[in-house]
Image (cartoon, rainbow, N blue to C red; front, side, top):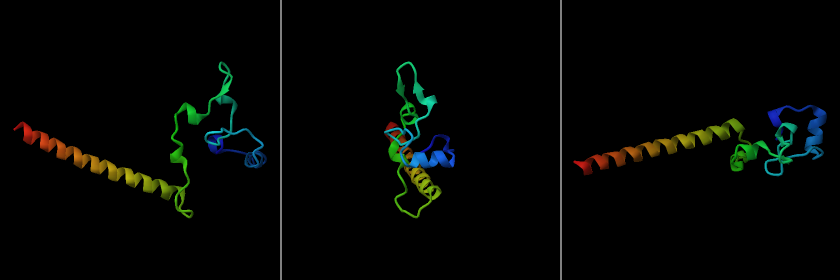
Length: 100
């Protein structure tokens, strides 16, 4: 991954050939703005924002586009939300009945 998604052809080739420094955790290009001069350490965005790297996995179907992959994830989350809503309503009804 490249910071901000922009890279010239020369740098792209260097990046792909591992000639430019990358984060060991997520593979992003190491950039100066992520270097902490107080500690002398490189703090990648994945560490700063505690990113879950499992979300960054490629789609399970090789021909599936990223938008289709994320649509599936969104639909799955909507289903979970609906299920949770039904469960909450059920519990609230049971609580109301037990209070009567």
